[in-house]
Image 1: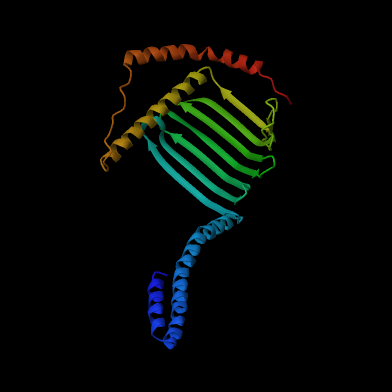
Image 2: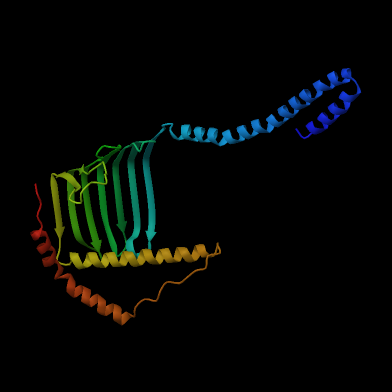
Length: 309
């Protein structure tokens, strides 16, 4: 287009010379104009293509987001036998943990529309914990333990959760300072738990505040034998055992942090100072005095509880 005035000037000059040259020069403006129009049309196509590119990308993104998907994960674990031996100083002495027949399998399904299905089962043949030669000792033996769990959650549906635990027999004996303070047995136990949801799934703006959501948990517990033998000093001894174990594991954790701090740039911070021995002894005396009076409060709470069968 910018060249067209020059072309018209040439046409005017040529027309004054001869008619033949004028006829020949009449074709040049059309050709030049066609070239100019074709040249000017090229950027318009580019601009149209450029403006249409985001639209195409948005269509592709929308098509990708609208595509449903589902993920399925399946796993299985089989452990024949596991033996762990530890020396826990003079607190628990030589401790042995033996586990055999550990099996587990599960299935996890998750969908794009918030569908969720989880099923898992765990089985244990036998597990035994034995501790000897320390202030705290005893034996815990668990036989034939099984657990099955199922979780189902779908949109516009009430969720559902189920769990069932079955145990063959469990025997326990706890020793403190060489004497048995607790012995018990629990056999053929079966526990079932299931929840029930009554929730408004459609949240509307006009919903009143009086709408209530209710969740119920249904439980069923059965057993064959449940026996416990305790002595007069069982309660204070159990509290002393808990304090000793807490002190031991805290000390071991602090020692491990101090050892690992030598390998990395993290500085070691010593624990806070403990209370004086006199204050500690007075606190222990107060705890010992309170140990013998806490059972009436527990019995009062249990007797005042209500349950709907």
